[in-house]
Image (cartoon, rainbow, N blue to C red; front, side, top):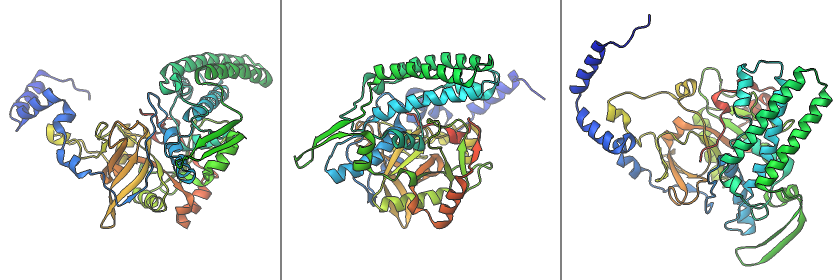
Length: 449
């Protein structure tokens, strides 16, 4: 039976606060400095020294600026590092704007197709509301980037550079989503008015033409062919003429995208380990690569990451970066802030509880480039972020192993490092993955900046 808050209960709470040990000291500290500053543990900052027993040199971090393309920057970082080394191009970057253009174009078509498929449902239906809430956005997943590259290739940043609208994407996203919602409503009406499939498809094509125009004016027209011209670190001149984006990827990047798979750590009751999952409406390319996740125990994920690092290959991963982190210092640790001690309140939750309650989910993608192993166990991890070279250690962060346990949800692993039983589990599971609802936390997109 519901019960209101009475004045007697409030008086009881006030008395408890008055008699609570250190409440006055904690109040002064929190009110003057803020909760996080007042509860920060200096020893934790000391313990997160940026020294690692295994470390891959990856150079200067990229900068996604005011855009939610962390997943894209981080994925392209994993691809550019071998290229930089092989061709002696120290600060070389792949064009994040090129993949951004095609991602937004494909997401627009993805939205239209899903709107058409759900036209028989009410606008108030939860799935329809989900689609119209965010027709497209900057955020994404590893498999979505792979799908773009498999279809459109990739180009150097010098060939298709950033624009004001890729560096700060809010105006473009607002403009494009307005257009998509308007067109989505029209497509629903056409379907519900009994128009033929050909008529609906013809109108959708006209709508996509408008989308293409908006993107081209905002981001530039993507090149079909280009000259790759550069001087390497030894000052030698090179030129590769009339190369296509797909030819460039095959010749200069050549990463085996098919065999780099997404693994997740989702220890909730509805997600058995060693099963493969997909998420309804999660994707960007109609008829393209499906987003699939192999659910692993956290120690299994760590072991695979360490194997990959030892081989000289970095690891794309997804986490909840806003939790227990200090951006300026570049630190990620569950002991960074002692709010439990400041308030004398138990805030502890298991990873499963955080996922089930909405307390935590993946919101940011970065790259693991190193690990510190002491007595056979990882203690901290070296992280390449995509927020430029100002935060952290010239753009690099240090992540404690306990933070990994709590807030790392996804890692992309080269399939060759999986033991036979996990390879079999993935190969069998990907044929008919278990489909999760659109709003499942494992469908969260990486977008933080």
